Amino acid sequence: VLAVHRTVRQQGKGSILMWRYLQYLRCLPFARRALLMCEHFLVPFYQKCGFEALGPCEVTVGDLAFTEMQH
Image 1 (cartoon, rainbow, N blue to C red):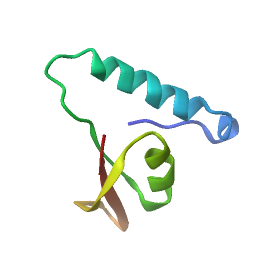
Image 2 (image 1 turned 180 degrees about the vertical axis):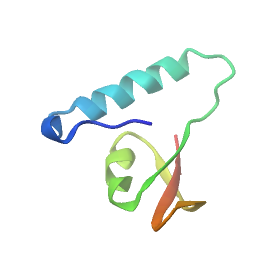
Image 3 (image 1 turned 135 degrees about the vertical axis):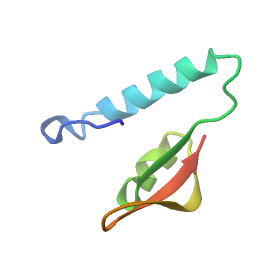
Image 4 (image 1 turned 60 degrees about the horizontal axis):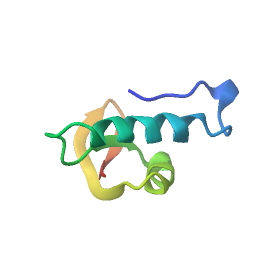
């Protein structure tokens, strides 16, 4: 789970965390892609990080629906 506390959002911290994690994954010889699920309002953020939307995720949590994305 990646989350940035609301008091420090819009400061680039989420982008830095995601960039560092993707850099880490690139060093793993067996990792070919990264998959995630996010709430719909976060799709533009993850697209800026290089992810592409695959469509609705089959997983739901109560009323929450998610979009599946891959990098």
